[in-house]
Length: 560
Image (cartoon, rainbow, N blue to C red):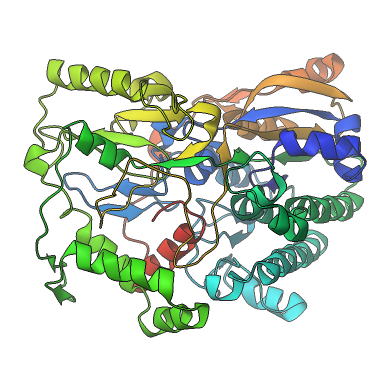
């Protein structure tokens, strides 16, 4: 299985038609393909957790990059221990199958499997990123240093260098894949190429004349950057496929799609204007739990300093400050998280990377003021109605397409961990990222610069990713509808001849297989023991490692 992070048929189909992606074209012609619906919201971590388990977020418990800690307003980064339910790799391993998994999100700490694994960028360093651990040394001996991520903006603020680093990362991952494919035994092999997602976040405006940030001069230099990345990976697909025999099935997928980002909505500012949230007046920050920072600077001073530095310091000076004070901004964010709001006068607030809304519920939040039951439902209804009236002042158009109550899109044991409301943006062209150290000046802004850089975040996720499958028994040249990311785990198990656990929400995509194949090889199911799926939750990252993960997520615009 090859994942193309954030890949979209909106780009692939035109480029296939013009002959720019010959290997993708052949896979689509000789197999079946179609849109692959992600989870709502279409964020990396919950989407991959749903792929890994075949379950909706209400059953696996992952809804965003961070999760709230019960009984507090504190948060922690999501890890593989946050994900409940047996993983696809553990299921395959339990049946004696050998697996190889490279660069799949929501997978750290790595599990003990029958095979090998290489972590995604949620591994905090370049030393402890493989299972078994000795594999890291083997990879280094064969290909040199493995590139976990290129998201170090000291190296990438120059866009030409950034573009070069994207291709360098693709080549590095390709060498790793081919080495492991040829030298390790495997029944199931999965790899994710992250470059497609990264390049779309940062280079979309250069190729899209309708984008509000489009600049013709910049388009001359960088307008083909996204296409060049797709073409590079298309070439890699040809190399991978050349290593497969006729008995091997190839699956392509993306966890979500991509498109232009047209605006940023600051929901907590909107809540303030609606009288549903109260920011504290400027006040001292106080101490963190360990007492490591005793600062009496107000929020405005700190935010003002960060803003001033971002606007007025050169790239070299900003990089020097980041090196001299590693993790400084992230520590400040953590301290300010729960101190930003007057919780006794806050009824609703937003937290997360897309548009997740929480009610300050009595009995659940430490200082909750909204009564469960009728008052809770009345407030949710009010927020939904008012958000559907929200218009972008730059265009006059409605910005919210739908607001879901959590029970409308999730079900399962961990429904209570979900946001109370989830926003879906009109045309999926808006983004809401909430930071907890500032009071925004306005509800809308037209751009989002990546962490301490001048790089613009101009592309964002869409609900529809891609799916394609090619192999024995698969229909050829067929485009399907209705596939979901939760369907991939059961479909892969079916291809491997293994039974599908009966607690998976997904289904085997029978429509991509010949009728004779289904009759000869019917789908089988197995009972599962829920208790065997649960692992002990504990803190995974040290303070320094948490800072590193935060920096990477900020580098992609997922948090601020």
